[in-house]
Image (tube, rainbow, N blue to C red):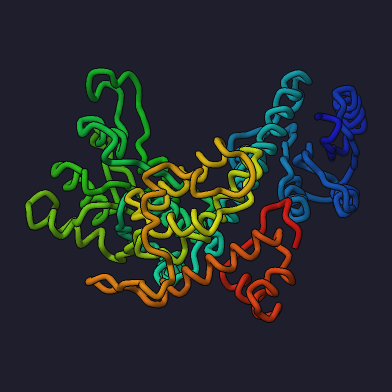
Length: 467
């Protein structure tokens, strides 16, 4: 691993350069040396990456800290250790303020220096891993990765896109399993706070007597069992976003304290008189009607209005039935990849049954069903008989039929048409192994028309299917 690290030594003392070169070379590093700022800048200008630089503070033709800044401009991930024979607290502070990993005073022990070098490279690796994780999360929570093309979900995504850039508090409402946390993450990872933490907390899953400490932290001795200081979620989320799920379960005393955080942007850990700043964006979510909770005296009206700056209602799955085929297709692809399975789709009968099922657990229930089918069936087309009984029993009314009855409460015409179109296109694609020419022939459509519909609906074949 160390052989991959490239190290630059910059010092005008030839004996020290030679000693450092020999020590680092024996450790397996690729080492280059320079005796001046000009020579170092020339070496750094090559296309080869630099992982670490050991830089003398005082060079014959310039300042080591200025050279460090120059190196970081061309190699942003480089770690720099400043070496000096004139150590002082002021110089050490100056070096670290400008981005140095460490400040070492000559003469130094080579073993101690190697330890610092190891820590610097470990820090660089961690930074790169964190950056990769942030990039992966950003890709995962892009707007176009949230599945659905019906009018209801398009309205939600349009709102998410509008509010992501602001710091305003958002209240996400909807039934359990509709994807409220997914929407909250989409807001965070598409906001200016994306490089900082997204910290979720389920207010209904933590006992009331412990929740205050979870939110705001505590100091040693604040209560029995508080054996040390502990940071709360608001402190951990500093600079980022805190997601307060099931906010309707918050006790009235804690509602008062949360109201203060929203109003004043500050809080005190349990047992402490020291106030801390709360530089966080708050996104709250609930599956209960907070207006009715206010009327019953179970939720503070002033807190409700503080949270409800930007209301964001998420539709239930039964209100967006047109997206059911797309969601099934999405989760089949996901579990084929993660579980090493080979489901190729759903028969028209099974799709029809799932379309009419009421989905009380919403998208979470649908995801769990597809995972179960991926594990138990493993490959091939999911037939009606493969579905659990309570799903099969909802196949009473076909999607389109001369005898179709409009329910007394009415129906969404556009969603019903979209759903049937999705069913037909997916069935034709799955029947032909995702051959668009053959699928278009089956549907008696122009190939260009079919391709446009596939693109608009966001349909993608399983990895092993041919296009």
